[in-house]
Each structure stands twice: as C-alpha cells, then as structure tokens.
Image (cartoon, rainbow, N blue to C red; front, top):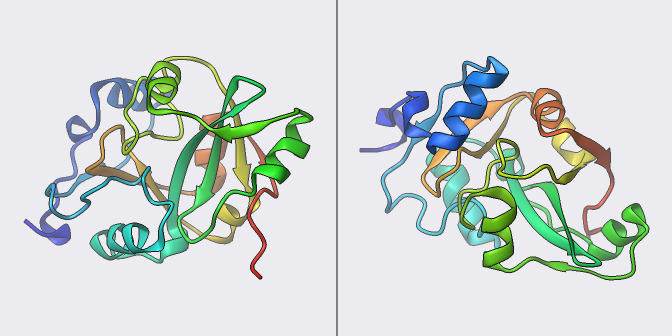
Length: 178
C-alpha cells in the first residue's frame, strides 16, 4: 500500500483520538500508512530525515507536518506544536511560560500526560488537560498534517482550527536559523 491507497476512515485513528474527533464534530480523513512508510512515527521527527520521510509519504512540504512535543516546565507538562522543518527553542518556551527550567519529557510522562506513545501524539484528544503552545510558523500553511494517535496515522486540518481545538496559544518558539 502506498500513500495514494492509504485508507481514510476515522477508525484508523487511535480509539481515544477517534472519540475526540467525534466529540468535536470533526469529519477529517485520517490516513493510515504501512508501518514501513513512517518507521519512527511523527513524534520522533526531531531529525530532518524522519520528517522528510513522513512528508514524502503524505505528499506535503516538510513544514506542513505538525510535531506534538511534550516538555516539562518546572516539572509541569506542556505540549508544543511545531512544524516538521523546525526545532523548538527551549529558552523561548521557558521565557513564554515564565518558568525556571524546560526540558523534553520522557516517554513515561508523555504517555501519562497524553495517553499516547511517543511517535503518535496528536495535538488534542489527550488524557489530561495540558497547556499548549503552538508556534506561529504553523499559520503559514493552508493545511497541516498531524499524528492521529498512532505512529502510522495522520490527519489534515487548517492550522487555525487545529490550534483552536488543541486550546493552543500562538507563540514564537522556533529556533532561529544560524
């Protein structure tokens, strides 16, 4: 199966995320890719090669991928939504939150907070209510693609709508290019 034959049923999404879509009244085409297509999922796309593989499988630009990244700010989880071509500047996150220390959350905290494993964290539909920061760069696109609760499922949505459903605050937390 290739991306053109990827299925488009909400049932392909993680059950918790499919329920969140129903509760929000969102009718989006969740696409499932074969496991070999997205080997490490969307969450693990800190490196450009994995993000590039996902973008190629979807047929979109690298920056149209939404990474849902969980950080700890003074021990409190915070979700940062970042485009696939960029990296989060933790100092900008720290300044935005007014906290002392910000670091990437470990796998256990990610699962405990969101209900999803690293690799498939969607921007909303989480187990707990978490503060969400969305990088302004996402708004540069008409449509963005985010994980649908598993490492091999994605869905498209306009960035404004995605950020609104995530309860996100639009901020500038992208690492500046050297």
